[in-house]
Amino acid sequence: MESFFQCLEKRYQNCPTFFTDSLQYGCQLTHNLSLNKKRRPVLIFVHDDNSIQNININPIGIIDYLLEDFNVCPFDITSQSDQQILRVMWNELFNAPFLTKVTIRNCPLLFGACDFLKNTGFDWPIILEISQYLTLNDMINTFSTKIISVLSEFQIKVHVSDPSYAFMNMINQKLHPRQIASVQFNTDYLERRKDIHSWPIFRCVQNLTFINPSGSLDLDNFPYYFPSSTNLLFRFDTEVQSNSFDNILHRFPSTITRLTITTTVPVEFCRSQTTPNTTIEYFRLDISRLVSCPMDPSMNSYISELLLASVEFISKLPNVHSVYFIVNKLIIERLLDIKRWVYVVEKCSQLKKVTMKVSGDMSPNNPLTQTKLQIQEALSTSRQEFQFQVIFS
Image 1 (cartoon, rainbow, N blue to C red):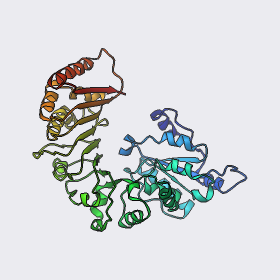
Image 2: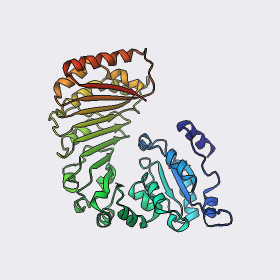
Image 3: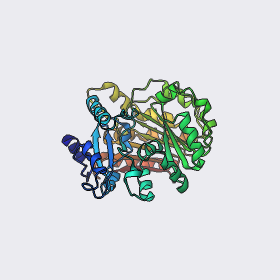
Image 4: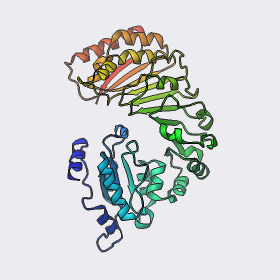
């Protein structure tokens, strides 16, 4: 436990102080008014270093907010042995199996070990504040199904992950269609489902996310069930076959105008794409966690060809207006090539802005700063009012 605290302190600034006693003692405090006058319920924070969700979620801010009213117990399940320890502890305390959906892809997770609505005197505004950081699935696990009526009353937007037919049918009946903002699918989950053709239609969902999509992913039916979907996001954290993503690209729903790809592994996303996509107006590529290693020639080769691959892909999006890259300092120098970007501007007549966000600082004397200025000048010459930005953070 102590080593886990040290790890979080290194990763996050102003890391909060977690509940350091055992989970069993924390649960006892919840029901013992003499020891716990504030009746603090127990929240469990589950962390996995390998989760791709760590890119987009910083749980520390919300945990710091919760510490005033909760005992937050952290658990690290990065290793198999840590996962087994938590399963055994959970079974001993609650005489029930630990949540089977706690996987690498789901973390970080935050949920209650006790009945929040029974053991706290919290007002609903506080409960709803917490809910902003959870999927609807996690809200129900934390607060029970009673949360649904409150979400409906306050018209709170929700995000759904890997829903079953029964779950989707239930929320379709109890929530207003405008409240369901996004749905996320793991591809292995989709491939196991046999009831997809029985789903209700969600007319207001705009965001669809697919985790590790395979070449067999069929997007043809999704416009029917999600007719208003405009934003498509793919996340990869496992090895991708060379032609799998290309197969998906050919079946993009015509409603999609925004495409995001987030990956920690090489993705060949333009190897054989020949048919232009005329609906995509915004393209975002997050490769900030790709790391070039001298001992990995395949990764080095991929990064060295990344700009060419990206340019070829973007050139197949003739109506794209904006391109946004998120990269690290090891990659940015491979992406600053004047001729390649001039080629993109010539191919994409609607393109108005290219932004590259780089993690880390750069001194004004760095050679890349001068290269950036040269690209900006060359592109503005080709097309007036064109913006090429490199942002360091």
